[in-house]
Amino acid sequence: MIETLLQGLLLGGLYSLFALGLSLMFGVMRLTNTAQGDFIVLGGFAAITAAAQFALHPAIAVLLLLPVAFGVGYALQRWVLNGTLGRDPLPSLVVTFGLSIVVQNALLELFSADPRSLDSGGLNTQSLALGAVNVGVLPLLIFGVAVVCTAGLQWLFTATKLGRAFRAVSDDREIAELMGLSAHTVYALATAIAFVLIAIAGSLQAMRTTVSPSDGPLLLLFAFEAVIIGGMGSFWGSFAGAMLLGLTQQIGFRIDPGWGLWAGHVMFLAVLVVRPQGLFPKTRG
Amino acid sequence: MSLVHAHDLKAFYGDAQALFGVDFRVEQGEVVAIIGANGAGKSTFLKALTGLVKVPRDAVLFDGQPIGSLPPGEIVKRGLAKVPEGRRLFPSLSVEENLLMGAFAGRPGPWDLARLYAMFPILKEKRLNPGTSLSGGQQQMVAIGRALMANPSVLLCDELSLGLAPIVIQEIYAALPRITAEGMSVVVVEQDVSVAMRVSQRVVCLQEGRVSLEGASSALTREQISAAYFGVYA
Image 1 (cartoon, rainbow over the protein chains, first blue to last red):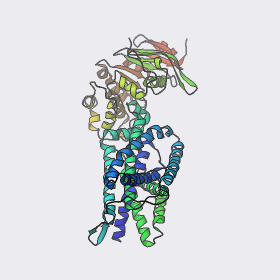
Image 2 (cartoon, chains in turn red, cyan):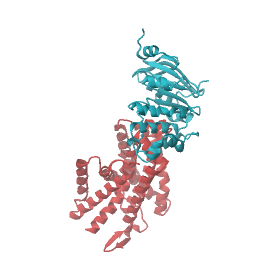
Image 3 (cartoon, rainbow over the protein chains, first blue to last red):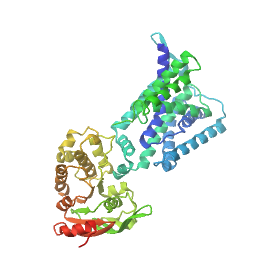
Image 4 (cartoon, chains in turn blue, orange):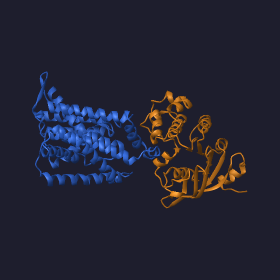
């Protein structure tokens, strides 16, 4: 049972990486990125391609991918998504849904439907003995990255000038602009950071298991469930939501191999009914 | 040359016209009150000055330069800062963080946290509290402080007394001489005519989007103001 719980927490670490970008974009600009899962898959394929094409160590490939992801996120928000923001959430939902279809089909065209993975340099076969339980090194590393990313994002939000700007435009865009902020630039920076997190999540997903062009919607579902369970716009909330989701799925898998995902969805629905605002809504300073 | 000069200023919300050719000037160091009934166009006028309502480029001059079509962030960088109606503090930010947001434009000047805390000591005590957890009067101090942190040449105050007790209004306006001591101009939009007359050197009355009266606060009579305010002439 301890092994199941531990595996659930480690799986939750990966899910929290899926969720962080979504939580950030919603928290700052109330934008629900329905292409989140497909961008994660795109990040995975980008890391695989960079490592293969330039014969790079996977860690180097991932590190080189991060500034590219930052630039892509900035440009996407600045020149595409900013135009969809307003009181009506429908335009941004439609545009990100459209992007999700474009990304899926582009990946299918370029890479076929075959699943692929990123060579982790042997990390995915190594394990550590923690007492009577053996834990995979790669899942442990992913969990560590998730904790660092969540803590880093929380620190950015609460202790930096940029974080103040994020919270201010989220609270009251008009007054924030009266203070001299450009909401469009602040939004673009938020999406740029979200895309760095997406690239990290995609690369680690490709190392831990495989990615294929059709994986996006399922990854979006996990990210969405983690964010909703934790509370929209709350980073540690998303982290806690991801842990709960991972734990529930692992317990479901233990009871019956076909019940894992189903158990996670049931828990998500239960939270939605009992506490629709999530467990820890909205990050505060 | 006036510091702020609005000339034949017209403003629209969609097809609805809210201002009909307003002429308005503010000189350096002057305190001007804008009075008028609900819907007279007072707040729209301040929004037009600060870029929140788009107006033609040359309709507003600041220090001789046209600012009519500039975005709000650019206007605050030039030196026009606003205390918005209803205070509108950022709920996610503490008192001190709200004040620091005012300095985002990065204009140099005498106003910083130390000077604000000296003027409103209660804000220093409560600097780590969420801005919106304070009383109405204290929130108004934060809103004024936030605008002062931009080190503006002209401070625009929209309905400072709205929803506040008379004693609190008195306390808020007591800070005005310290604000204007170094030559800052202040434009105060007020519904409370007696307060407006007391704190200003000049009064401009708006009625249905037009200037219905203008003059030195000390020279205008109660009858003149009533007539201009309500549009009722004897």
